[in-house]
Length: 468
Image (tube, rainbow, N blue to C red; front, side, top):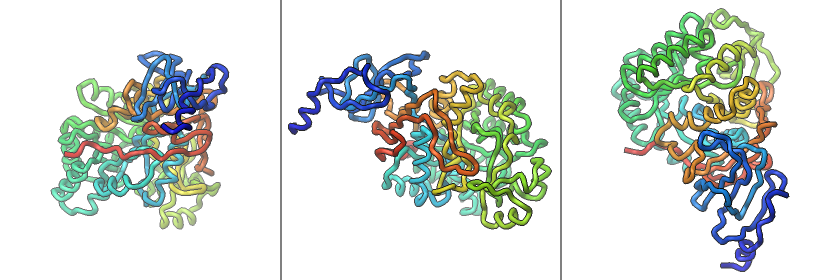
């Protein structure tokens, strides 16, 4: 052992009671000290809140105990130590190799340790994982099979199924399709659902309708896919597609389906407005009547500009993202109702891809901090919202996430430390490129990925399903 290392391991441990929060002490009284110990944190463990220490061993695994000693010890008194937030509906599908670094930076500063692109993903998952695993990552990453792209690559149903199976064989985490953006016959989608069942992967669906008179038809269709195929079905962002106008009815349908033995989950994001690209089907003729808005209600994201008929036509050619007015999906009638359900979780449906003032919904940078703050605002128990950003998304992407999204002895050390008094999202439509407040520290696979407002170690890995 080198003399410097010996001296470091021999320095007596300073009394933790005198430390300010999140300050580091180097040294331990035992040579078997853990690399990192989070001391005096507030942890929801064994169904109750406890003040306890969470350690991280040399293998990047969680170790729990009462007298943990660390080479690096952080006093996180007053802070919550949570499993790392899991974003199952992250979005970085456009030119990801040149944008992923920015994308991951804004995810980790929002407390996210794992960002999975299950609303889209890749049409060539094997190649995606091979390429991206060679790059350094702040957080863990993973993709679903992108059916919309595959349908453009293969003209026949059998050809499409072969490509989907190839992706699933190569580790794709699920099958994803967007029926509103690319209408597809029911019988064809049912075949994709059967493949999801065959491989025991979830089927992620952006539903077929977002209009007031048809949205529940889309919910019924998703449930029927689950019934006929036996697949686990996840409905993307229910408050903007399926429950905008009839959330109570949509949730009742899902609740009934699950009571009958089906497996149907959904997610929401904690915002009262949606944003999407001007070139997609939502802005086909009649959009003003469908959503009760007009050109001047549309905001060009990343700026303070409101559209006109002329700028609408101009930006539609370049596929700019616009946001509809706040309140178009009233939180008290949509998100707040959905969050009461045990099958509803948080998913961002977003990502920041460019610096600065990206043309991206602010949920790409602030979804999770905003969700925690909103839970406080509506008196949702803290442990409930933590479950909806950790254990519940973990349960959907199983078994690939079996050792993540939980605090247990031996689980992988993906952890988020936040201040419950100050956590909040700061990103806005005008400026989405803003870090969230209150995220004190993020640990990914046992290494500090974010602390003191700065990104740290790049220790993220690819999350993929077991290859057949």
